[in-house]
Image (cartoon, rainbow, N blue to C red; front, side, top):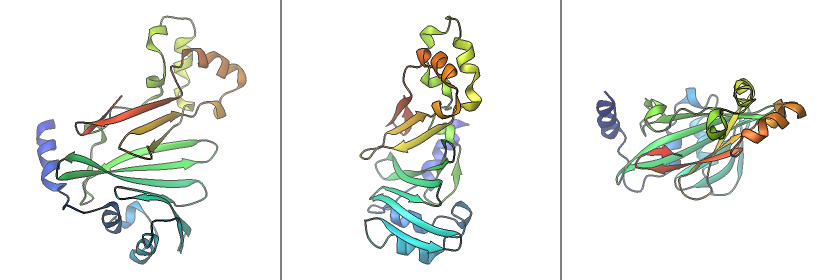
Length: 205
């Protein structure tokens, strides 16, 4: 089944040489970016610098743009990152990161073909949970299970590197824990950030 999905993916995700993230963004379906018109998208892409454009729900701001990457701020608390990731020498997949930063930042990651057909995330990205930030060599120690049991208050944010295709995941745990809880959790953490490398058409830790 996985091989069938992979063959299907390659058949629909071919990118014409020279196609960039701006061209892909212009065809982004309205349900993925509500209220943003074709005209709004065009205005955002006019130049490579930061651009703010009014739209029906307020203002949308371009924060960063490269040939294969676009980051836009959709509200005071929301951002969307779009990234073209190479699958083969002449095909790419679109990765979208939607992040909301209210009390703390939390991200959701999605994958689409360049024709905006949704693809199962587990083809390209292993399951993400707070456990990947913890040192499993300490799992027999007292309070390790307690630290993991707080997973429901461990929001994880994601961001692409400024260059290349790596993905950085950050465990935003301090804002939602008491000082005592932080003191109990911290000894079991390997790090509060993890870099996922894009290799052989998938992210790997």
